[in-house]
Every structure is written in structure tokens, then in C-alpha cells.
Image (cartoon, rainbow over all chains, first blue to last red; front, side, top):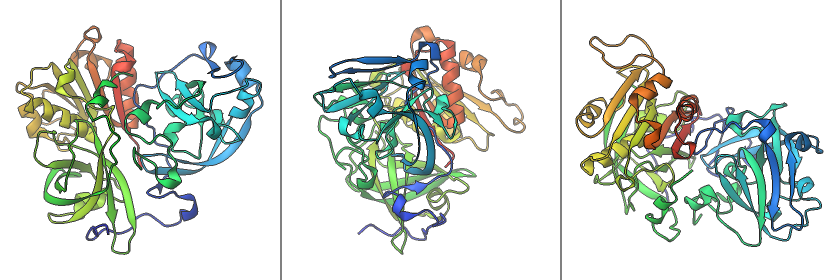
Length: 201
Length: 254
């Protein structure tokens, strides 16, 4: 039994739909920013997105090529490991299914890598089947650098550190390799509904 | 990004972060809106300067709320101390800063985070840049450096609204005497009589004056509200500091 913190009571309004709020989270209307280092600002003419590693055929797109690919606009709830959740966020981007089409992936794992050196690892199955996008618009506007622009990975069913900001590519592999936060004590998979925040959760 | 070497010293295993009962031993007012809680934590495993903990409060109706707070104390000090700033529409910080008193209990787990960490063994030069209560994890680094007896070129630039809002004023004066160069800038209202620090928001000129030169490749740690950190990190990179040596910790408005 946890100890009762004498005099503590709920202060937040209870309008947040509990079926949408994973354990230990609270709803915010703001959009907080978290990153381990300075925000990179890469010019679009130097930007590219690459799919490589354990694939039959590596691919890469320039910014113009990338934004000409068929895009989805999705409205999803996002959950940050630092406890905030934000409901009904709207993103536009390219489904990872579209990017992998024709690359003949044979590895079961992927590492997303970003400008600035950030990486995060995911099972390939979590990036496919219409569950992950490379998003470049937020709420109808170009994605702010602070929030990961020009483009970030969007994997809303996992804690948001998996949705790598400033993403530049996916490297597929036949084995799992921990990414940046995953090596610093954060959970390897990061399911918010199982509250997988840290190692051992 | 650099610094994976730190992790090895945390131990090779993947320890589970269990919830532990924390009992408040002492509370100290720091500013009109912040106070420090000295805690006794059963079987606390120790921490590194810069790490944080997750705090969980439980109401008598079973309602729970979790938030993260930076550790203020040095690893060398006997208890665990958190300094908490009260947020106007917060849920956990009002209890910690107004209601909580010695003997009260809550749960915490940690330490969390292995990147925004500095130990004297990593050497210097060390540049710490703080906005408001962003000084808390940097204070753990300075206290650790003081416990190690100094010997590292360390500098702190702390931006606060006013002197009254400046955390750890007296202790920073002592640290400024031989352990680290301490620079303050006040961003709101009148400076007190005889004030010799700055009275404006941080800018490139101020960061250059604090130093050290980017060519000395200092390890840089920036902590504060999102807007402050974005601006400070941008200025530091523009001055020539390697982005991979600039560690940031941002806290949002919520």
C-alpha cells in the first residue's frame, strides 16, 4: 500500500477521458519540448530521408521527392514519458509502409536516426501496418524545429521519445540495438499503457 | 551527443526502479515560490549529479499523481534533497511547496537519466547555464564539485527574475569563493543597490564574457524553461560550441 500524502487531493479537472489516459499520465493542452541537446536547423536543400541496412534495396528521397509522396493526415493522442499526454494532435506525413514498399526489408528491427546524433530503436512491426509516419506538418502548419521539424518520426502508440525528432532515416537490422535514451535507462519498448518508462518496468 | 561512458559507472545491470517511501525530514524556504525538501528514503541507491526522480503522491481517496523533479543534493551528502518550484496551476508542486511538512510521506523512484550528468572525474572546463529553477540539477553538480574540493574550471551563469527569486543565493556566494565563477543576471524589475551583476536576458555577449572559449571545448549543461534553453543553446552553438557537448534539459509550462 502506498503511503497517503496527508492533505494531497486531486486538483486537475476530471474531464480528461480516463480511457484515453495511460497510467501515471496527465493531460496537457500545451506542447512541451524535450531534447538532449541544441535544436538542429538543417536546410531543406541538404535534407534527405534514407531507408537502409537490412533491406534488399536501399532508398533515399530529397525533400521535394519526399513531400511529393502520398501523405496521410492523422489525429492521434501522444504520451510523453515525462508524464504529459496530449489528445487529438493532428499530423501530416508519409506512412512508413509507403517508404518500405519495394525495399524488401529482411531485418525485424529498426533504428531511427536523426540530425544531432539521436537514435531510437523499435521493432519493425511497430513501424508498419499503418501505425507510424514520417510527419512534416503539425496542425496544418510546417513542423517547427523545436518540435522536430523539418520532419519527425510519429509512432503514437509508444512513448513519444520513440517519435524521433529531426529524423533523417531508418536503418533496419536483424538484431535489436538500444538507441540513445534506451541506453540511458529508458525502457527498450516503451508501451505507455503498460507504463514501460524505465529499464525493468 | 557524447557521454555514454558515464553509463558504465551506473552498473552494468539493468536495475529496476522501484517505488520507495520518502519521509520528509526537513523543509527549507528558498524563495517566495520554491522550497527544498530534505528526505529520508529507505534504501536509496545513490545518484549522479544532474539526475532526477519521479515523485508520486497518493490522496486518501486513492487518487495518484506523478511528476519529475531534479535532485539538488550532491551524491556525497547524507540525505536526498529536492528543490521544487511552485507552479500556479500545478497539481503536485503546490503540495510539495505549501502543504508538506516534516514527517509527511510520499513515494519516489529513481535516479532517472544518465545523459544530463556531470561528475568531477569527467573534468572540465565546465559551463553551467541556468534559467530560474533550472539551476537545481546544476547545483547538484556544483555541490559535488565542492565536495571534491574543486580543481576544475567551472562557471555558472544563472538568469533569474530578481534577487529574491534567485535560488541558493548565499550558498552560491560561498561557491563563488574558490569553487566556481558564479555570474548572475536579473531579468525583471530594479536591480538592488550596489548590484554588480547583469540586468538583462542572456545574450551572446554575456555568454562570451562568462566563457570559457569554445576552443577549450567545455562541457556545457543548460537547464531551464523551454524558451530559455532553446535560446541559450542556439547562442552557444552560434558562438562555436560543439552541439554534441551542449547538454540540455528543458521543462515545459505544464
